[in-house]
Length: 485
Image 1 (cartoon, one colour):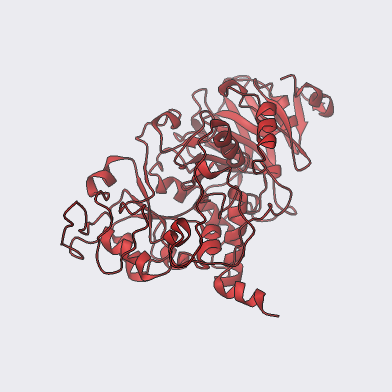
Image 2: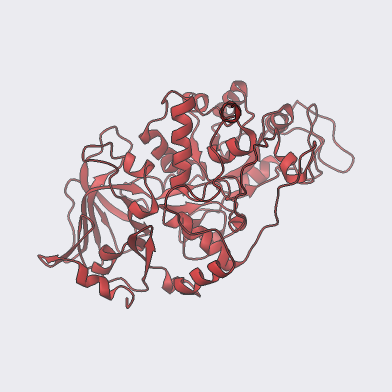
């Protein structure tokens, strides 16, 4: 607490509590009481109370809830209290690979930029599994309100890592299966009329083996991208096996399936996925930056397919969920005629994010019996604005509290200091004083990590305004129009 003690002098104390950033806090325990505008999937969220028990579970939600004597109390009446955001798709081992300035080049299939095919230069870079770099990337997510993710690598004690048993942090579920190349096509194989990919494609048993099966499918705009879906959704499309293995189409579309990207999916493909109760993760910034196109998100939602929101990776995606919201909002405004409300986008990052990883009985909603992964977002704009805007228009500086499993990991520094939490370090987030309470779980102090990342010139933790060289969020038509004299 030594780094935060000085902040106590900045807080006005009243009635046994401490006032901070529009909030009143009182230290206590073992229960935690949070009073704010509670975001549930209703059109008109109302102020209320959430009680978190000593196990880190939500015990009560309502206008009034009974509490034990001397609970820890957090009153932020103007803030929106949301379930922790869920990011079902990132490649966190590339979080040290900064985006490059956009040169206008676009692709029709991911293998073109991965492997330098069809006259393109190779843009892929090797992953970096340095634990400090992974932790730095997860911290970018954590301070934007993400409490759970799927990323192919992990740092302990920060964001829940849904694809690792050790990263579930007590959730009673199997980890999800994360397949980047479900057709065993990492070598750059592209097909259009058969399924002659690699010898070891995923099969229905693998899809059913984890809590969910998340796989890249149809990441591109051409027929080679759509052919991937044909080979993964039919038992009749190709029945001729390859001598070394693989070669036949299989139907992997089942409730466990979550498609990543799906840029090339047609309406008929989406209807097939809907019939099989599958889900999709939408990554608009990365799709538009690489292909100038993205998922037909309006049709997917009209069909009732759960659509979650994912950052993909730093080189062509968003550095945090705040920036992915910004891209989705821009795309909706320019190309979807405002079809997506703030509530819709919030749902993609919470309820549908939980459904994408099949953790909907534990995460993604504020309800008794759910895990207390909760985030307080400061209101966006004047009083009376849509409470969901506080999430969709948020920045790490406007996140007042991040709680995972009942434990506070990040928040307004004065608020955190008033709760007398252990293992906290102060940091400046674009002019806002914040506190990071991760020291008891990490082999490093945040100050040491920050110095190491600066020395290695790793992309910043947070930026004020548009991040450096942020990938564009424009369609092919937008890019062409901008290029005209």
